Each structure stands twice: as C-alpha cells, then as structure tokens.
Length: 246
Image (cartoon, rainbow, N blue to C red):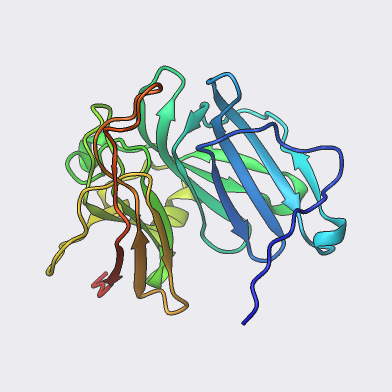
C-alpha cells in the first residue's frame, strides 16, 4: 500500500484561514465546511462548499449565501452527513463563549442550499437530551442515526456519554410543523469499560456502521492561550461496538 499527500490547487476563491471548524463530505461530490475560529480569534458563521463533481483537478470553492435562518457563529461543533444532500450540525461554542446544544439541518439540494433549525419541545425533551457541549464527535452509525460522544461543557468539564440522534424521526419532524421531542434523542447505556472523559478527539466508523473507533483527545487540564503544559492528551485507540435496540 502506498499513501501520499499533495496540496490541491482549487482556484483563487477559498475560505479564510480558520481552526476548530466543522466539515464533512457529501457522498463523493462535495466537501462542506462551517464556522470555526478566524485569524483574530472571532467565531465564524460562514458556510463553504467545495465542488468535487468534476474531479479534484477542476474542483472549486463556493461560499453559501447568508440566507436567513442561519446557525450563529461557533467553533468546536460537528457537521455530519446523513445521506443524500443533508447534513446535521450540533453544538459548539458561540461568539459569547456560550456552549450550545442546538441542532440544525443543512440541505444543499436543488442548487438552493438552506439551513433549518430543529427546535426542541422542552416540555417533553427535558432530561432526554444531551447537555450543551463543544469538542465532541458526531458520526453516522447503523440504522441511520448520529452518534454523539464526549466533548466538554461551559466549565470545561469533559464528558464520556454517548447519545443517539434519531435521523428518521428527525426527518419526519422536518416534514411537519411540530418541535423536536425526546424521541429524537436517546442516551446509550454502556455495558463494558468506557473510554475516559475526553474532548477534541477523533472518531470514525467502519463500513458496517457497528464499530466506532475513538482516538486521542484532551482528557485533563485546561486550555490556556499562553501555557499548554497543564494539558494531558490521550494516545489510546478505543473500539466501541454498537448493539442498538431502537
């Protein structure tokens, strides 16, 4: 096996430099990025699409117009492709350093990309939805569900919980007028040893959608602009096998 890297030339138009943004691939046709932290520390709320439909050599970036409604600027959030032309955005840290747990659906179909916030019915969802978080992972697993793991809250307390966002129920909601209820979220029970509390880790899933791999992340300490010696990072690789009864 041979693995090689190369820098892609995608034309003069490109997203401004950033970090802690969210990104996902849409089939093999597009790469979508949203938000992050810009050069001067401000949270970004822009959305960019890299068109791969004509191959890498002729790919080009397009900025999605700011058509209301839009997710507020944020960083450390997740953007997960759920099939077709749709993606789900979750959580992150906002411009006022608040930590979020809102859910947005992004659809790029019909050459008219649009965002839609999926609002909770708090009377029925209370206690059945994940706490606000940043630096979590969110991946599509078996059954067409999004698995959210870990992250940290507004007090920088790291999480080790697993949540399932029910995409079929979410899309059923999206076609109607009701708010999201507790059926949209389900907290998973862990029978065996769970990975340590962590944030800003990496996660991916195999082709079966049953085995999730979690690597690295911050497991102790606090981020400080001038001093990172207090941070502790994890280099362990975990496999999480999913047996979902949904």
